[in-house]
Image 1 (cartoon, one colour):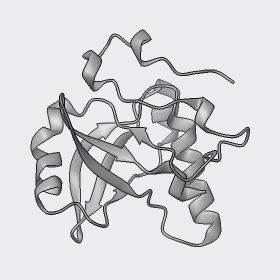
Image 2 (cartoon, helix red, strand yellow):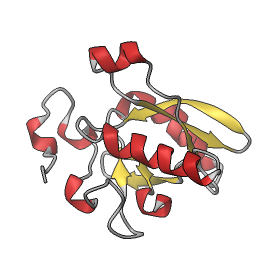
Image 3 (cartoon, rainbow, N blue to C red):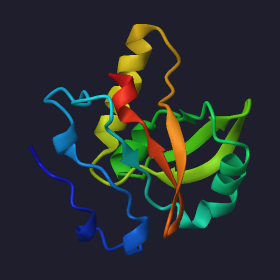
Image 4 (tube, rainbow, N blue to C red):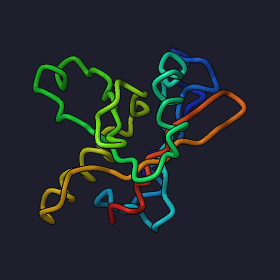
Length: 141
């Protein structure tokens, strides 16, 4: 299975390239355990929006992701992430790191098939590079 290497992606600063690995998922893109996370990329431009969520306590945060259109798929557009927090949808808080879009799409499909809301749990974490959003992929198993 391929390993996504954030150091190969030089389009973003090193501390803002996100983090995740396909090695954390089984063949059918199910997280291998409940602790698997995926850190969003391109969060630097959205620090104000992330800070609002962080300051509100950050409990019960979930993604608010719209499905990619066929046009987005054709042009390989980034998968942008918004959060559902405090009863409202935030602005964009980051993007899924390149190469890991299928993992998020599969998680959303899995949730829909179960008949639950297609929202991935998330948390805001403070790092030396600023605030970042981690998707709690292991909770979608």
